[in-house]
Length: 425
Ligand SMILES: *Cc1c(COP(=O)(O)O)cnc(C)c1O
Image 1 (cartoon, protein in one colour):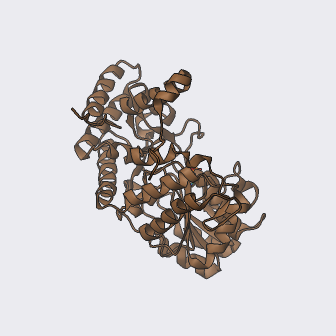
Image 2: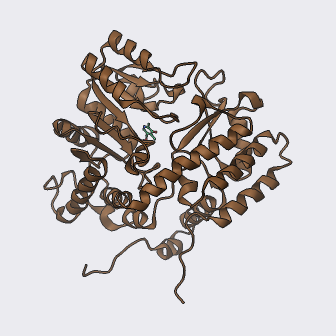
Image 3: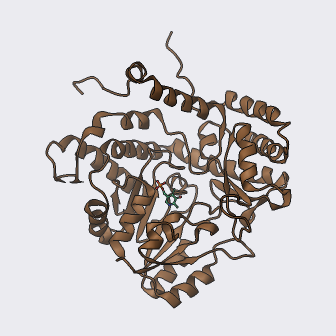
């Protein structure tokens, strides 16, 4: 602690490179000026940003604490050791690896630990709520492995566990993957575990989307059920952009060797340190209040949107996100995204299960509550947002854009993202 902290110096950036400084400030204005309802986004804290903007970015640290391929790692080792200990405490996990640069990398590392090219695994189809890395043909996961895809039951729009069991019995996969990017309901990890045990498969949960709700004890944890849990650290969890893996002790060696050197080179030590900061935040009691409010807000938003004539896929949400079917409104997902965007409501078009439209058009939208909840918004605000979205979506000629934008402005001025710190007088 003898040297002063050499942290982000925005003045230096602004003086040297006004172009990029302008991007940084414009993006902050954009975040503050609209409603961020992208379900995978959040506002990370100044403490996390400080770790990210630190000189830890300079250090090469291939390997793991105490066993590096470079000298001078004794300081950054502490960041990774602290982060691993916090991750294990937070998730009750036997082992943690914080090195994956992203969620996709975490999945590649997990596959690399258990699968060989050509091996069979079972994953959820992207158009049903899964993720690209769960076997989509455009992804390494679909190109390098024999990816068998399950989906949701057309009647309930919940995961079709009977189909999962049937496909597992038929294809005898080496691995079964649960999780996805547009699954509003809870996943029954016990059923997946049972199916995996029956066919002798490794059970992996990709908890990228909902791990923050697990950390905040708002929903059940997959950690006791799964052999390996991969996740991102930047979604509900609210940490830096990145990935991580927790697993049973028996898989620790395989996972570590797969993350490095199989999948990546040197870890991003500034990001590893920022993950450690984020885990400390998640261990505070206030984070559990946050996680509960995220779910309450998602449910309030979904109920409000249902009143606006948008049909919640799977009947609603137990998590931070909802998928809305717009077919009864006659508006496509792409049109809805554009109309909301024009008024400062940022959300994404999303395929719904059995969508008749191509993914570039889509019949649905996906909304999430993590960012607006970080701003301090509550159920009453969600009702207002739902009504603004309803107005924007039905606004064919843009005649009500200004009115919706004014409603958005009122909300974000009352509860700003990244409020200016109170100045000492
Ligand atoms: C977001 C996400 C990922 C990928 O994370 P990136 O950091 O964008 O690579 C992987 N799996 C699921 C389920 C996700 O939602």
